Amino acid sequence: MKTDVQVVVVGGGIVGVSVLYWLAKMGWTDSVLLERRELTSGSTWHAAGNTTYFGPYPEMTQLFAGSIRTYLQAEEESGQSIGFHQTGSLRLAATKRELELFDVYKPRYAEMGIPFSIRSNEEIAELHPLIDTSHTYGAAHTPTDGHVDPNGTTYALALAAQKLGASIETKCPVTAIAPDNHGWLLETDKGSVKAEHIVVASSFWAREMLEPLGINVPIYATEHHEIITDRIDEIATLDHELPAMRDSYVSCSVRQEQDGLLLGVYEKDPVFWALDGIPKDFKEELFPPNLERLMPHLERLMERMPAFADAGMKGANNGPMCWTPDGLPMLGPLTAHKGLWLATGFNVGIGTGGGSAEFLAHWMTQGGPLFDLKSVHADRFGNDMTADQAIAAIRAVYARGYQLPDAI
Ligand SMILES: Cc1cc2nc3c(=O)[nH]c(=O)nc-3n(C[C@H](O)[C@H](O)[C@H](O)COP(=O)(O)OP(=O)(O)OC[C@H]3O[C@@H](n4cnc5c(N)ncnc54)[C@H](O)[C@@H]3O)c2cc1C
Image 1 (cartoon, rainbow, N blue to C red):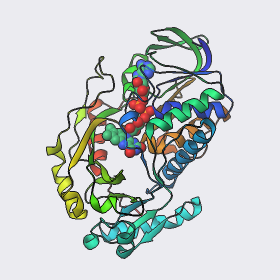
Image 2: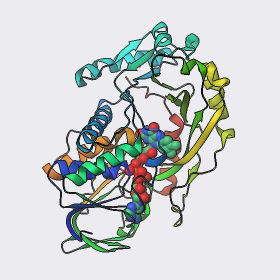
Image 3: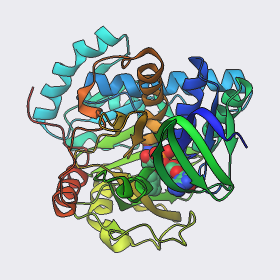
Image 4: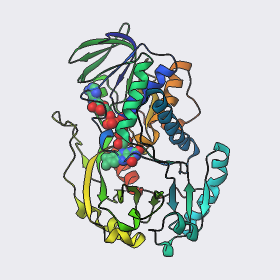
């Protein structure tokens, strides 16, 4: 194992591995990624892999678009498939107001060079025959996004980074981080590592990891469910893969998974996990599903997509999801601690991990971020936010689900 490096990345989920990859692409190959268990052992292994270009904030859309670009590049360089399904996505307008907002967003997509169009109910029915459009006002259509296989993608990034000279050490938990006269000293189960820079990409573990340094990272984990249905005949007989659907009325995303559906639900009253600290014996297991909680959303989905009402359930995954108080990741330097960088707090880390890593690696290697995106800066919450304040803010942001901000 390398013991004296320019940069250590802590955490081998899709975000940490993407950072290792982009640093290597930009010439920083004197690096090692330290992972507690195996790559993807946190939230990455059980994610649905959805990534959409739709969103109210163009800079965030750039992170999404940069992610698909990054993953495809890593696939090419490594030979490892990322399992990209370019299904496109429909963001339904559940209200007239949402349709008006889509009109406002449209020119921004033209500026970014990302295909975006507004579809009528008739067009929705052609693209996605399972949607009942009697209560929709149209949809925003982003035809070039879709979903990837999170595990394949993480390994493609890892292989491509290693080809460039970066190292990865698994089964190597970091047990302490402290400044020393060279920069930083990390203690691990396999010995000490000196580094000029550290990137903390350890998701919901980051809060406790940095607490001993007097750094308050206000991130907490919620439970998050995805449900997979059995085969649905209407899907099995289609001649194209369905676009993903997102809907503020149901507060749910739905995409095709083989001949069935895979849905992810944002409940109005999220359930937090491990508020007092991540259990020391937590590995990568899932929580018992609680479908009762999801019922109000599932009932709405039956209205929106009647075929779902008759579908059997193949499985339900309830896993931990990392949240910051405003729902955006924490990216960049902690300016009071030279050489310490964050890439944590991701709740859509598959969708934004690759692009965020490019953004951060540019900052680290070139002295400034790839573009101006203050809303993700790592020290934006200050150091004084209490746990109660953070949890209340996360509760509100999770419950918003797919609701759009009112301001045009
Ligand atoms: C059910 C479900 C479905 C989801 N679906 C999607 C989706 O469709 N699209 C999407 O974009 N997102 C989705 N997500 C969210 C997504 O899984 C996360 O945003 C993403 O995986 C976060 O990646 P990460 O690298 O930040 O964190 P993680 O994958 O959690 O990685 C953090 C890593 O840090 C390691 N680590 C922790 N402590 C230490 C230590 N002391 N030393 C060394 N290593 C350490 C962990 O072992 C872990 O491997 C979903 C989440 C859930 C729960």
